[in-house]
Amino acid sequence: MHEVVAQLPMKKVNSDATQSIGFLSPNDFQQSIMMFNGNTS
Image 1 (cartoon, one colour):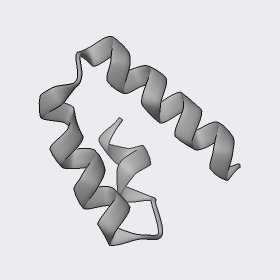
Image 2: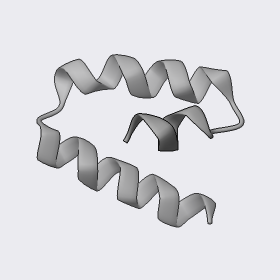
Image 3: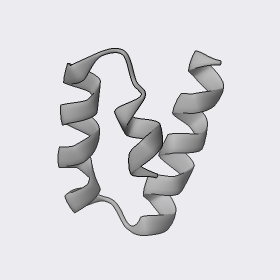
Image 4: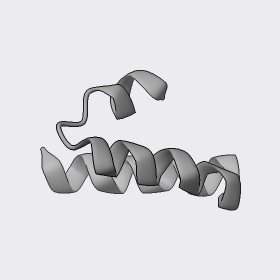
């Protein structure tokens, strides 16, 4: 999970994603990552 975030080109997105972890359950975070990866692939 952290490896995927580390590969993001924009550090601001990396920062926002890291902060969002505290407000999302693990399942919601996984869904968010999959959606984000789908949008950027």
